Image (tube, rainbow, N blue to C red; front, side, top):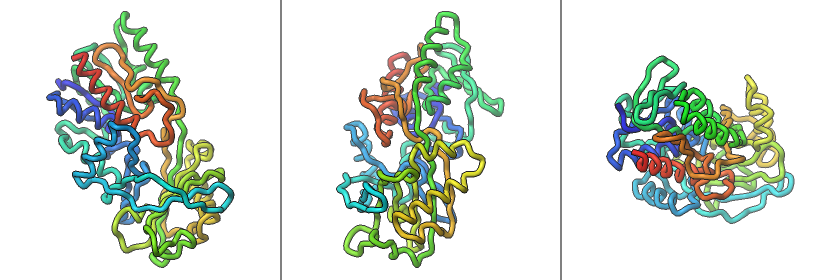
Length: 357
């Protein structure tokens, strides 16, 4: 039996698992995906690494700044030399100051791999395991998976998006004196709301590397990003290929606005949405953006927290806790950057379980 089972290997789950392991707990880390990191995601397309989840690492709280220093010292991340623009009126780029942000040359999921470096696949790290139910009682939990397998743990941390956490808790058949606790927790989690997002990854011929119109700047950083505050489809576009050394053509990542994503988030075919986003960027930037050599589109149903839980973690009785970027560790409304909330929630979940051990 494990001391703790941590369900979800995004930033919150990884942080929780790392803290408990450092404190001497035997921790089992589980995730339904093949990779780690949740939205700290990197995808390989035609041999090229592209960050289709987290755009960059930008700490805003003291807690995450400490981890940022650790990641810098380990060579996992580096400052991104980037010029920033905003579109405040249609198709007009305005240069703006931007605080220092960081990226990983190997892809942003290198952060997740670093945080999980003390976990070994098929020993205490299990990916492609989708938890479908939690049963048992404090001190003796059973987590069952969709393939019929199960693991047992004394304590359990659920670090997944709020709707998934609510579904999992709904399977927990608790004793009579704890049913109200579970029901209250599910109600609280149900109040959390998200904005969705679509991300388009697009690669271009090398001839366009220095043909970016007004975005080309031989005297400044090669990297650039544009935040669109005027349009209805695109929210952000960045030169992803500038994060890492490569001699091939430019690679762009385009993020949609939440309202635009909501129109397509459940569609079987996302190609029409990708075409709209590519054409919109072409009008605002340079015309060749509409004709990539290749492109992929990814849906993120739980991209941004809209309405959050007002505590850093949510205890569900003894030895069972939930958390993630949907928990506000600072008591403030999160903006579109949720990494601080996820990290601080991971720390809070670990502290809850230590206190109840």
